[in-house]
Amino acid sequence: MQPQVIGGTPAAQGEFPWVVRLSMGCGGSMITQQLVLTAAHCVPPTGPNTSITATLGAVDLQDPNRVVVRSDFVHRAPGAGGPPGDDWALIRLERPVDVPTIPIATTPEFDNGTFTVAGWGAAVEGGPQQRFLLKAEVPFIDDVQCASAGSNYANLVPAEEICAGNWDDGGVDTCQGDSGGPLFRRDNAGEWILIGTTSWGIGCARPLNPGVYAQVSTFAPAILAAAASLGPRCAPFVNTTAVDIPDAGPAITSAVDAVCDGRASNQTKVEVNINHPYRGDLIVDLIAPDGTAYRLKNAKGDDSADNVNDLYTINASNETASGTWQLRVRDIFRGDAGLLKNWKLTV
Image (cartoon, rainbow, N blue to C red; front, side, top):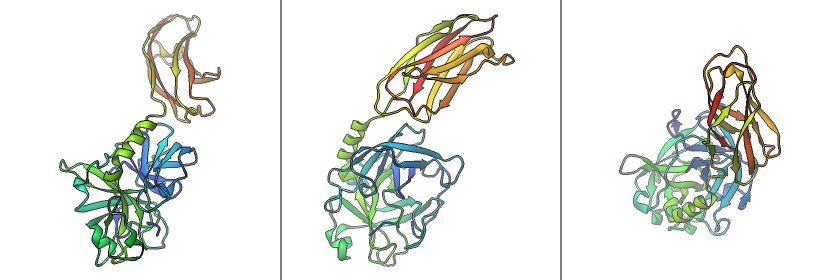
């Protein structure tokens, strides 16, 4: 009963930017810029977890511009692992990702009609998973008809599961590798809305054996409450107090106090805004709470451009995220003074 998209066509780059591929071979959907909604049966129990990676931002899993981000926490539905139905989970990523997100259905208003599914799962029953994202359309099947398929379908939980597929002919379905991926459609405003997460089915695309999806509208209060409790792992920290940078003088520092759990990211970002008539005079370092210095910018005598308005990315994953971080700036050549206007740290 592993869900596997059959009968699909390739999705265009950027068509569904919130669809995620997970390293254990499942799918998911970005419902915030840091939270992936997936299937509970794809993930381990609730708790800290850095073993999962999410790939997004590309339909081709080998695209050099794809974004790959590690998890830092899993929240599994409390009822998961028992009777069918409660098959949802949230994965918090170690950092926010700048991609569009999809809202979840909070009422059953749109739990009908024709849905779209998308994933990198097998394109034939028992076949290999796919390199390119596929999409397909599947019609709604009501609970009574779905349960009439017998076998495991007789145990359908109508309030918690929704069925979709071509009842008479089959031929279109999710398949292995699509678990946790999205079942979605347009709302009244023409915007995509998430209706379900791929849960299970008997075989793939068989007649009279539709795909079964966790019904998101039923679980919306629990999903939203869990999302609020997880929140951003660590919001950006900003220091907007301007500091004068003396001409060929001692280094100046500016601090932020980070309060968040876990370790800093391997994609720690530092946005620096400095007014200076000759930016080549400046050395800029980020100082971690334990005193480790990360060089952001070296002095370069022939760099005569004005100002520093740059975003730097460093690997600070060896550092504890919480603590006092400092930006250190020094002008090492005579002739010009400057001003550190502000800076922002995202650990």
